[in-house]
Length: 275
Image (cartoon, rainbow, N blue to C red; front, side):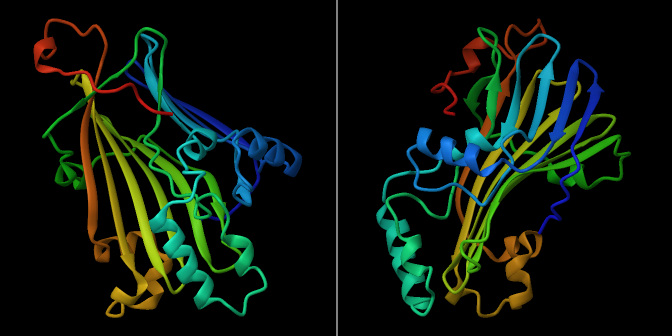
């Protein structure tokens, strides 16, 4: 897992018409977390909540996308869900000797599972979200290319009363020809399941759009008996063993693009981005 150094930092990097900003600061104070929990109608929020941490990519024309903890938490289901309750009950039974086990099963998703994919920036001029069959060329990303800028920003983490972990972080790397963002939600409930929601965002400098892929992978621990337990705590290692449950591919099209743009009649608007 990430180390939790609390030294504040803010970094800016310019990539063509894009300004990349990564800000990392202190964990939220308990009184602010309690106030926020009331506003969000949730019994509690993650133990380590970095409410002011943000990764933002903004185009000189005003549109863009950012990633932050508050918007990620808004995508958590604060009502009971049959799958989540079943999971919670299984977890409670497996930890019946724990003094905290009964505290976990409440009327909200205590795992803080979120399908957050980023927050679109701009007033009238925003990126247009359209479905696509295009995929991010992962082989191209593996090619050796100078990394001009890299940063990783932790948004929140909770240790689920010492019986697992729920965390979300975002990292970016900028190369001479493109940039790549990975937003990862990782959940491990000891003895029960491992879940991973990944959002990948890729933009090549000569394109008038970004590609965004959202995937959900999940497995019960009982189905991972063939996997070394040491991998359970390493998202990079365990991901290859988690079955793919969902894949959504989208194109984030630039507003008011020029004559080289894709014809508007080939782009179908989807519902506004949910935040």
